[in-house]
Length: 96
Image (cartoon, rainbow, N blue to C red; front, side):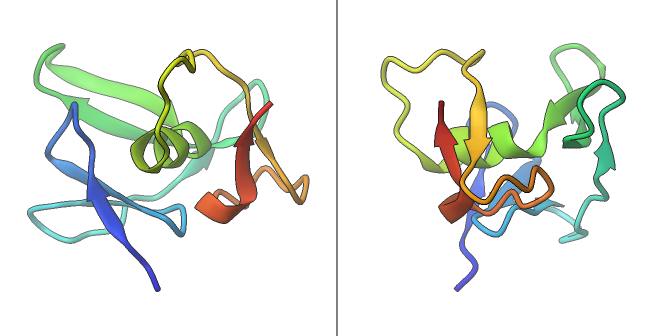
């Protein structure tokens, strides 16, 4: 079953354990695009603090939204059990 959680640092958006991001107000699922360097799916989210959009890789958004990360750096490398970097479901992610 798909579960949605609001980003703690940006309440405009929610992330699902299925690896999707949506706008809380409109309910629209955001499109993902591969990053230029390592081809991981990314989303661009509006930041009121910086007054611009910022890039986030989907695997980090999912992992850090759903997993308890005491002692895990935000620069930690998130890996995929099945080796498919496009599969950003929570049950496929772990910290390397």
